[in-house]
Amino acid sequence: MSDTPRSHGRKSIRPTSKPHSLMSDDETLADAWQVRVVTLFPEAFPGVLGLSLTGKALKEGAWQLHTHDLRSFGIGKHRNVDDTPAGGGAGMVMRADVVGPAIAAAQEHARGQWPILYMSPRGRRFDQAMARDLARCDGVTILCGRFEGVDERVLDHYGIMEISMGDFVMTGGELAAQAMIDATVRLLPGVLGNADSMVEESHSNGLLEHPQYTRPAMWEGRGIPDVLMSGNHQEIAKWRRTESEELTKKRRPDLWEKMRADD
Image 1 (cartoon, helix red, strand yellow):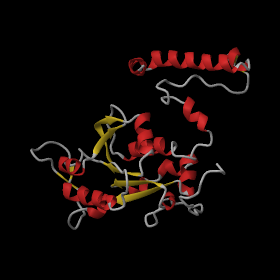
Image 2 (cartoon, rainbow, N blue to C red; image 1 turned 120 degrees about the vertical axis):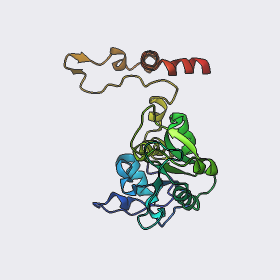
Image 3 (cartoon, one colour; image 1 turned 90 degrees about the vertical axis):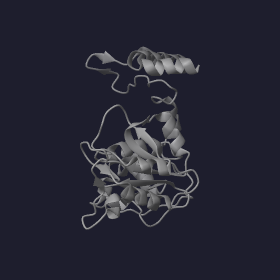
């Protein structure tokens, strides 16, 4: 990590009871990967992103996180952000004349390759390949929805890509956005100390990761497989590949079939 270029700069962050202080709303580091989150709950960020390796990288300026409070773009005395669905129905829909200006404000800072994403259960499913693509971008703007969703005209106008974390529905997009950001930030240069760990982990090669073991050599009557203690790296690599394939076949036959089709 000590050899990682610091051209993106470094932020001086002191311990605080307010995690939001890790974020920079005013200063933009020229070469840092940028995230702009449009949300009704800016206080939810950085959340877990301020911890561990992502938090360290945020502190060091390898990436930057900015929030845009949707409520500040609200309509009228009460800053309303939603209204009843056109055509009737349950729930509320986030207004185009609220979300649109918020997206526009976020995009004033965009440069280069900078997609706009909307966390939505009807979107394309997020995966490791998408995380790699996002890590190669200059930045990303993420819209976190609430209620019954967002007026479709905003999505069409800005060419926003809808992204899903899976076949389930959440109360809002904030947690999903944090998961997507975490998966992407760890792929940025210098964030992970051991580059080899990214090569061997689940989904990096289309397979689930092989089982892992460490000391003690014996626990509750269960030992570490002999091959891992043999020192024969060729046999260890073969064992790990076989285990990865068997796990993938058993637990994720969809991934196994996809990998076979790609071959």
